[in-house]
Amino acid sequence: MDSLYKMIEYGIYGAAILLILVGLYGALTKKSLIKIVIGLSIVDAGIHLLLVSIGYLKGGTAPIFSPGYEDMADKMVDPIPQALVLTAIVIGFAVTAVALSLVIRLYRHHDTLQIDDIKNLKW
Amino acid sequence: MNNILEIIGGTLILIGSAFLFLGALGILRMPDVYNRLQAGTKATTLGAMSLIIGVGFLEPSWMLKSIIIVVFIAFSNPISSHALARAMYKRKRYPIIKSKDKDMDAYREVFLQEEEKEVKS
Amino acid sequence: MIYLILFAVLLLLMLAAAIYAVFQRDLLYAVIATGVISLVLSVIFYMLQTPDVALTEAAIGVALTTIIFIITIRNTVRHEDEHDKHSREKKIQP
Amino acid sequence: MKNTIVILLLATIGYYLGSIFVNIGFGDPRFVNGVKDTYLALTTSELKVANTVTSIVVNFRGFDTLGEVTVLFLAATALGGILYKKRHAVGERTVLFPASSIVKSGAKLIFPAIVLLGAYVFIHGHLSPGGGFQGGTIIATGFLLMLLAYDNFSVSHNVLSYIESFAGIFFVAFGIAGLMISGSFLENFLPVGNMNDLFSGGVVPIIYILVGFKVAAELTGVIYTVLHEKD
Image 1 (cartoon, chains in turn orange, red, brown, green):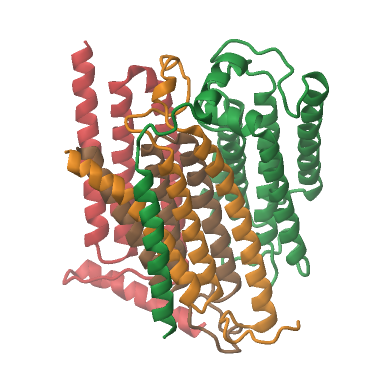
Image 2 (cartoon, chains in turn orange, blue, cyan, brown; image 1 turned 135 degrees about the vertical axis):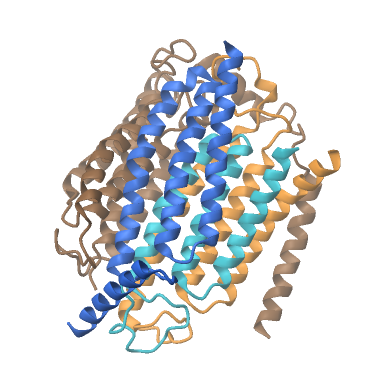
């Protein structure tokens, strides 16, 4: 039981770091622009998981003082990474939207999505 | 009294999870889109509904909220599966028919004729 | 006990979806796989006692990001290695 | 060759990240007397807000949220600027086939419920999980459903821009009122009620409702702009 818990607690960091690495691999090696944006959004997801799992407390409850939980302040998980990730997700959506609109504009101009074929710098 | 509520809730949750399992099995086993939609949607609608009602029986103060959730599942799930099936039909994905039955052969004839009409026009 | 096993299954499912999304050549399938990542991630956030973040991830990652990717694919090309100059004529319909 | 270099680079990054996070550990109460305890104590004693994440986002780090909402506004504006050239008029959007009447009437039936759920989520942001960002995105998904079902559904850009700018102006106005009355930007100056009441928390629920309106208007505008992009 204890060893299983240990395995999960390294497993969640491992899964988050592997998500970041897989996303970076996709963004670095793939040729298609949409694939690069997909890789960047996977990196986003990994970083959110990493930040949230830093703030976890063993056997903790959510940081909400609903009726019946008023005096559990020392058993609550850390709320600060949650507030950070909450804003980071919304910003991540905005960044993805702007990147995809740039992709559409590039495709209209060059008729291709392969970054090897987009060589000329002038529009 | 409390015991009876727990037994009813547990039975409903068991029925719901069995239906969800059958739906997942159907998605794996069925040959084409329409059969998969049929297996998935019917099973998951009934499964999710009875599971949520079962949770409402276990925690009686959540009963109102779970009834509202069930009403919205009853609205949205059939509509979304209808939209999927209609999109597949409009994209000319006709069903795969493998049978020695005569009626099924008649169906195949109808679909083939329709396909030929589309090609000609 | 069963909680931890569920946790491990969810993490493995998320990693499998990420690898599928990176190595799939059909971009539409890859986008659906990123939606699956976000869905599983919101369940994991809920199990890590962060319901606020789970709500945000479920609304943004599953619905809005996926629909914007799908609109982009509809306006451009669907396959990853499709790079001929006349792809606009034989563009795959939405 | 390139793949080998990339894999080596990623292996290095992964090794160092892994060693850092194994040293940090998982689930230990390591921030004793940290900023977390201060926030939890102040939330219950001064502000009377049940949800600590809300009080951090809106009050303790409210200036941060103002900057974040501004970044969202800038992203929406930049997206409109990048895609400005050709835009379909209302009703001319290319669809392969129109949605069936079942989908249309179902969407009309569900849309008010989705907007109501979004409003519930951001009005109760200080009591239960949820808040302005979540409620705003839920309302934006409701408008997305209507845009997908009806190909001539139009959202007035004037109304969206008025909602968005008035929400931003009132956000800054509440911040400056806090600065003038209580002494620092976005500080609470209204009376706080009891814990777990709907009318509690002073200025926090008002600002989160404003954030909800702003986020809903911006995300609806983003989806509308991208969906009406012309070939």
